[in-house]
Image 1 (cartoon, helix red, strand yellow):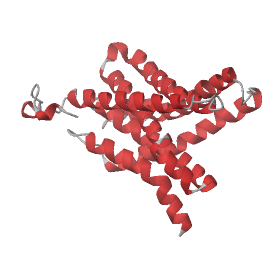
Image 2 (cartoon, rainbow, N blue to C red; image 1 turned 45 degrees about the vertical axis):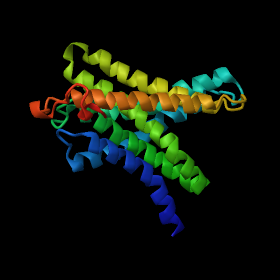
Image 3 (tube, rainbow, N blue to C red; image 1 turned 180 degrees about the vertical axis):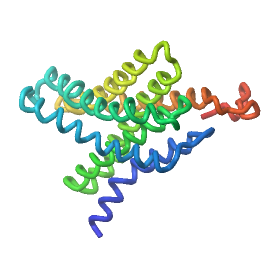
Length: 240
């Protein structure tokens, strides 16, 4: 029974965020099978993370109590590696699927991949540290991964349908996810500095606000919106 409780706690936040994004796809929802596949890709992306991180850990020695070393750790050894690992599956596999046919799909597929990654990571943490850690991560680390994915997916959605700037938007998708991920981790990694951990909360709130805006913008950019569905200025339907 304890194993089932831990599994439920580990899976719940990722599935909830995935369902939230799925329901935000108002105009043409993606095939369930492809969403599950995207979630599995997210779990598989942890293997890329491992194969990049393992030699880096051997070659690059960083000190836990050094704020400069932890900047390198947060932004490059953790954030860039993890976001790149997810980016590979989104940009080079899902991006070319025929069902990726509107900008919002970038957010959908990136989120599913992100939640697959975050859920596998969550399982490892919950089984190692127990229920209290799972509860904390339900409101911090997993939503953070969701926001990083939404922001990455937003720019990949723009890249897919703005061919003149496809490379730039793709690169920026990886960059913006890495920056927010790195900031979130960095303030946590240097929490030995009194009060600095609040930077983690601030960066998460900023990511949530921008993610909600990204969702709204791509909803409004859907080519599947019928004229009768378009929100009127100032009307109640213009709210997210």
